Length: 215
Image (cartoon, rainbow, N blue to C red; front, side, top):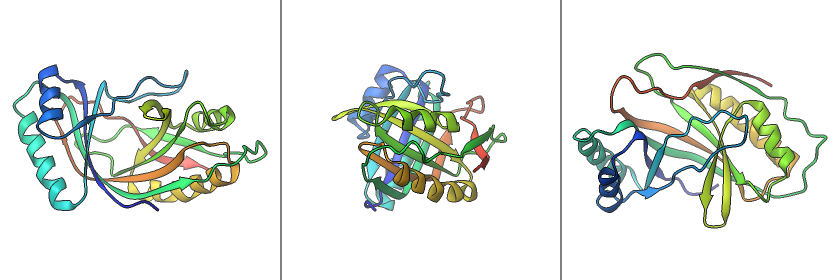
């Protein structure tokens, strides 16, 4: 298990270049933009995705509030999410075992107006060094998927988000599958719980959440 952190993400469909530059230079954000997704898979990634990591609660609250105050005065169209990394577990690499099936189908629905997801689960692995059959299995299960550039190559990030009780049931099942099936490289599974959130306006369309799943 890795050490816990607090994250603040700017997820924007519209972000003026000068606003982004201020977020990078003054507020300490880094660009963590996605770069496409597997063919045929749902992608709800924002056009611009910025991240700042905080080591403790007071720093997190200070940065989050400062960004909200700044973005209120801009033309930004999107949302801000503040997360606590509740768990972050590496999956040890081993050869893929095709006899181990992933008996999972996620059921997705839109959030009611005025609500925000409570938590999310991310499986991150190397796109080019992992077994394609593992990636295909995760795609078929109904996860969102997006490519993310990293210093050691391109990762593919699989995401399921929703209410805490649902994700709490899914997390150990998926962790067990990844460990048993193998086939991954540079793989981790992480839960990030939402502790603060803010949307720029009521018209923002948020990604659907997992309301149930078949296993």
